[in-house]
Length: 196
Image 1 (cartoon, rainbow, N blue to C red):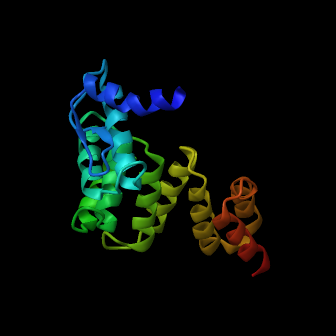
Image 2 (cartoon, rainbow, N blue to C red):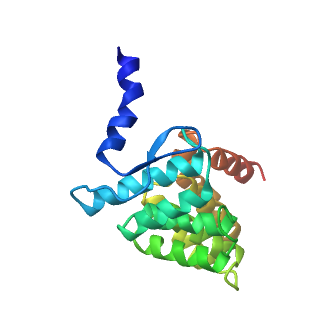
């Protein structure tokens, strides 16, 4: 009985919203649905983008993912703004465009998105916008970590150890929690710092 309900659920949902049947005969919502708030709209479109980006239950389609991310971003989704940056940086479903990627990441980073803060740390560490700016990279990595993205402290620690090799033990302390949570980059970085 439960299986029968699960099979008809997409049809019921499509009866409530404007839907289209995909190539795999799985209905999915294609157009704007009417929900009560902008947050719900943004979350709905972000989830649709994520599903298409990863190919969860639908064929993987970066072009559709980009379209859904754009809709989510228009409803205020900072996560979608960040993901648009990634799509442009890696050229997934769009022509590769580092300048556009950085523009999206800067916007999301200004709103506190932990991933965009991390990516902006990378852009400054690598000098993608021109000059390498280690001080700015450190600021971005630390802000990313403070927003909850543990791998950022590993990059922060790695850069700090190169800048101030005499303070290795303090740097290792910074990375220790992330390493204890299984963050492989931190485990490797701590090993390198302690045995060099």
